Image (cartoon, rainbow over all chains, first blue to last red; front, side, top):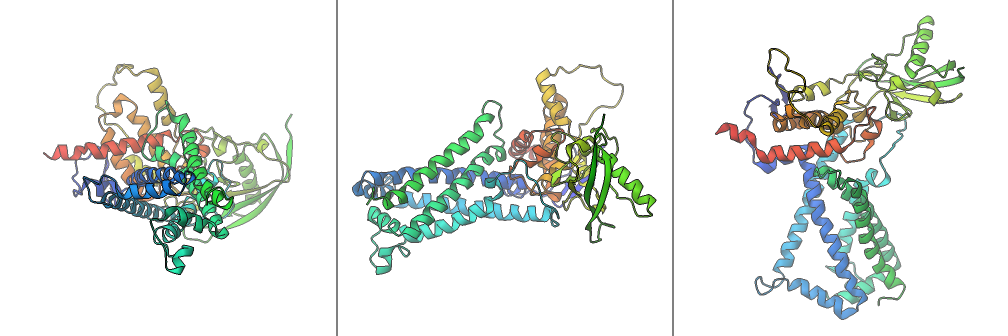
Length: 253
Length: 258
């Protein structure tokens, strides 16, 4: 006879037919730590897609001002005969904001759970064997990247932190000129480079971690998971970091 | 011929009871043979303490051959000490040098309250096992061996997880105090075998949900795998996550209700 164990969700056993209060499937999944890791992983994949295409799109600046500005206009015109101008772009933005919020909420509640799981820390120095800088600093790299996103939006989307923006004449459509003016400020360029390296560190551990969290484990590709994470993070970082450096070096601008 | 280590300084966590405030106490072992196991070294120290009329250091131990999962100890910041793939009882003094300072702490997790000194209560693991870490079998005469054909590779993979001795090193080593390696090993052990299929999805749901009540969450550091005396791979965590997702999607509880 199975013993009935009571958890804070109610009685649980592998065999008992006890019926628990029914909850909507997604809420039920999200109420567990494993479910929250699924949310972390899936929203992570969506945001990985964004950072990759954002980087690829920005490579247009090497082709010149018209190409980059046209690309920005194209994003507004996505699916235009079907949807009105800007609608698809805003749907994508809405999705990203939602994913970012879910990613943050899951991270916040999992962190709380983890703190609760070890209220008294080890009193002597830990000697970590496998945990690396990336995995140990996910919360910090994540928070700095979040601060960077806020700065980045106020610099190149809203223009309030752009040099032109402070004069009151920030023309959003002049993407190329805005980027060049922004990166001609040395501290700003340094901040972009540092933040993107941190993004890369976050992506390196996050990308590998996705495979574990989503249960994508197969001896066929297990050996490739680390390599994929390293490659993905490296491509995004190299692309993004090249932009401020190119402006500083006078290649773009 | 054995070598002798001299002047080993031990910083040992002493704590009178669960609610007491603990602190490190320093003891010096003047001389010890390198053939002594780590626990034998503590036994010798305890003999000395008792002779001097002091209280012996309390620590967990039983089989002393790495199969029972009773011994623990965080030694110099590593669960089960610096040697890979062994429990503390299989660690020998030859891993250390003369004049070393060795720091010994108990496992630390809210689910593993300290009973005394270095001994912790690991019954939270029992709660996880009770909630689903078993198979339901008919009573009566024992069935013939090999009645159910199981491919060798499957049996081996199941055995790799079944090796778990429930010592708690994974929780102790995890920066988040998570028990995913333990729970994953127990789930992988049963879900890889035909006998485990009947309760496969109800098992993973109830075990994961019980685990949530006591432990932290996995952030894929991999520290548990490094600390595990049986070197169980974190692949079992991925397997558990996959089965948990399937269990939630399959929604068998609804099936039973109709």
